[in-house]
Image 1 (cartoon, one colour):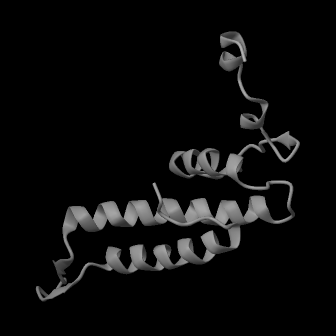
Image 2 (cartoon, helix red, strand yellow):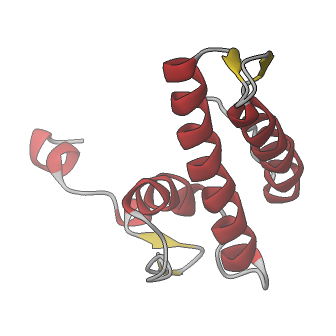
Length: 115
């Protein structure tokens, strides 16, 4: 193999199962789009339902990341309007999104939160 051949782009990086990588849905936010573009090349996007399932996964990913960031910012325990300490509600949102990631990731054949 020559050096020139090693530098050529590999066609499998731009296609999925003999077809182009589909564009992410327009309604996704930038974080979800980035996750979509990371995962789509690793999945069989020609299989019916994979694009929809991936959309659900990256939406849950975005929700999990945002909730984790807010929980880290505010802490695990916050004051209620009455002044009593209560669990930060963003922890519940993060935990629910994590459950969704694990379930949807299993359907896609990926391990959630590996990166």
